[in-house]
Length: 137
Image (cartoon, rainbow, N blue to C red):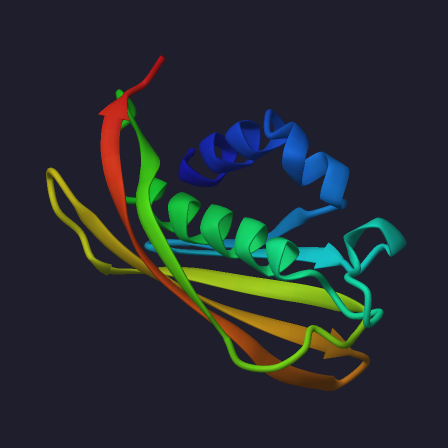
């Protein structure tokens, strides 16, 4: 039920569709999203634009928070910070979002973004933020 709810919500995110992103794992307080590094997602040096890392990291963290919310609640990002650690060179980016501290008013989340090529992966970004529960609409 929890995974179905997350996947149905994700399917309504047209931004994620534009980026070719997909959910690859849903767990209790954890969600993983992958996205190919498409030609339209690159910056001038030919690697993934930071916006791709931010978009999938923010969504992974938000959906991780949603896995812990009651059915009548959803979440929205109140704030999100990103540290870019290395260029997004690879075939695919993988963002794994996790809940650090759940709460009734604030949910503290994090996400790690890795660039993946074959069996090689490199941590390229860390995100940390706050999600706020909102009424399901």
